[in-house]
Image (cartoon, protein in one colour):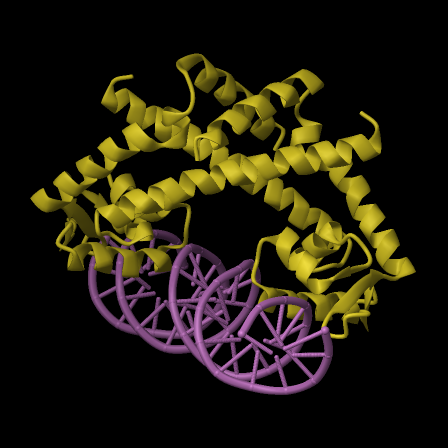
Length: 140
Length: 140
DNA sequence: TATTGTTATACTCTATAACTATA
DNA sequence: TATAGTTATAGAGTATAACAATA
């Protein structure tokens, strides 16, 4: 591919990629908002594999442990999880409350229905997209 | 698509989308860094259609005009643009210096070579990806 | 000594509001 | 009155470093 053409292709396709990621994030934010849960807290709730120590959430979130502390506090303040010491008493176990379970389920249902990858593409198209994105990500 | 399956598909594919967008951003940041230009400043430099008033850059950047002021100051401080009053004296025209032109060109060349959409996909694959992302974005 | 979680602090990206100078 | 750019300030998301309790 010649350079000027490659540049405009790179721009256009990269922009589409960023827009699609933004749309995905926006829809999630909308769903979280409707559920009355701050976005990052909703994200944590969706990732939580109850019961689990906070460190596991940091791993899934791919963030520093210091970021989990306020998120867990928020989850607790909303009555979505309890924070109890584990058998290794350095850890704290996050465990969904009944309310937490129902909100987690409700979020899951909305995502399954409204996520743009679900709402706008057929099974075949999803499969093709997965292949292409995987390839894109493979070389680094 | 059944709900539990749709949920895990949505998660997986959304995650791939976010990762691909992140990779695209990371490569750009790497290229900007190698050029010795702060990322957002490099982004502005790439978008600048010299000479143009600052408001045009705000439009291309899709950001508020207040964000452009420090970006333009940075571009000027690095000797990449000059800021001169336009014929409408409320405006300031950003114009690339010779150094600005050469850095802009160098960035363009690197992007054309290393952007993941260029480096990892064939022409056909790019075309398919463009189709899928466009479809994904169309319904909102 | 290494690990879990906490706290304080700071950095990046970006917006809002109020302002100045033109138009 | 409306527009271009500036300034001050604030908020979201996240990290680093130092620390306490426990292993």
